[in-house]
Length: 52
Image: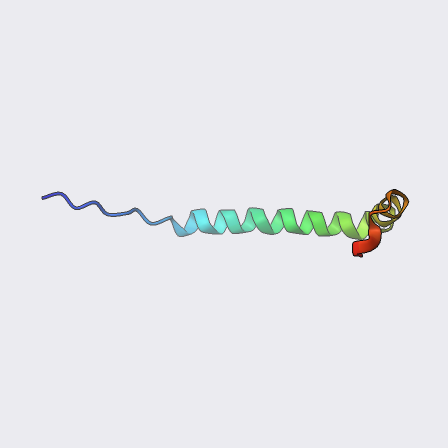
C-alpha cells in the first residue's frame, strides 16, 4: 500500500524567502523616504494625490 506524504518546506527555504521579502520591503521603504516628496508632487500634478 502506498501512502503519499506531502513534503514540508524546509525551514531554511522559509527563512530565505522571509529574508528576501524583508530586504525588498526595506529597499522600497528607503526609496519612499528618499523620493517621497517627488513622488507626491508628481502625483499632485497628475491629479492622483487625492488618496494621500
